[in-house]
Amino acid sequence: MQKNSSAHTASHTLPLLPFIALLIGGTAIGFAGIFMRLSDVNPIASAFWRMILAAPFLWLWAIRTPSPAQGPSRTSFTPVLAWSGMYFAGDMGLWHEALHYTSVAKATLLSNLAPVFIALFMWKVYKVRFARSFLIGLGVALLGAAMLVLGKDNHALPMPHHAMGDILGLLSALFYAGYQLSVKEARHYYTTPRLMAWSTTITALILLPFALLSSGAFFPSQLSGWLPLLSLALIAQIGGQTVIAYASAHLPAALSSVGLLIQPLTAAIAAWVLFHESISPLQMAGGALLLGGIYLSRQAPLASK
Image 1: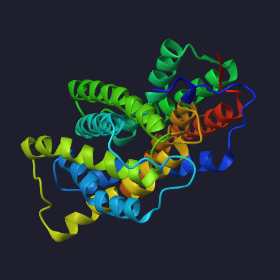
Image 2 (image 1 turned 45 degrees about the horizontal axis):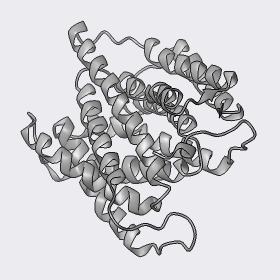
Image 3 (image 1 turned 180 degrees about the vertical axis):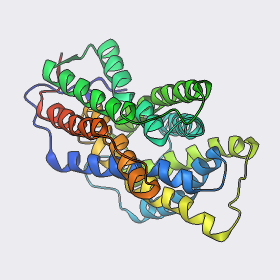
């Protein structure tokens, strides 16, 4: 990956519009767990249908979008596209399996520990030194996200099931970190629609055999069963990941990852509205801390070398 793609100096002013787009994309992805719970296919099949149903829309968009005179304009296939698809397939497969063992909010939280792994990667590989205020913002956001989960009664499943969900969720965070870094790199060369068309298609192809071999249905049992899967494709993949891919071209990878911590809050609110899952005062406080941490991270000078 390019060394100058990850480090931003303290004097750099972060653009507001891409950051708002990042939060909108993160909010859209926060509904993914809800749609998955509403589907009647196996978890990996949910991830596969999310990709394969989104792919035609993304390819149509990519083909109809002319290459810009300046900026990313590559159309040929390169390894970074394969890496983005493989990392995302690992993230999607592990995260959807984690939802099988634990709550939507907890699985989403664990998967979104990616900013920790991204920060460690940038510090180790690129020797990036993060501003103290950014690290405080990251810590506050993570604390708030943890309170969103710990403030809820999660004892509906036996502890062994929760342990399995925790392991799968943490592993998905590693793959999610790799995916975000790959997308950040790929946006130097590819437009948003072309990058997402390739990445989504590769992810679908990797997930297909696992979806077919997993226990549970591969196809929805009735026509209405396609609605949650189509919602995953249009809202979570196109409305979420595609918007995030756009934002990633204009924001540092570490900050983008912190902003995506908005997902556990979205998941908790959506579960409250749709499934009548209660939100405790501790969770409300956690949500406020989460938003405050994201704001503090954006206001801070991100890093120096």
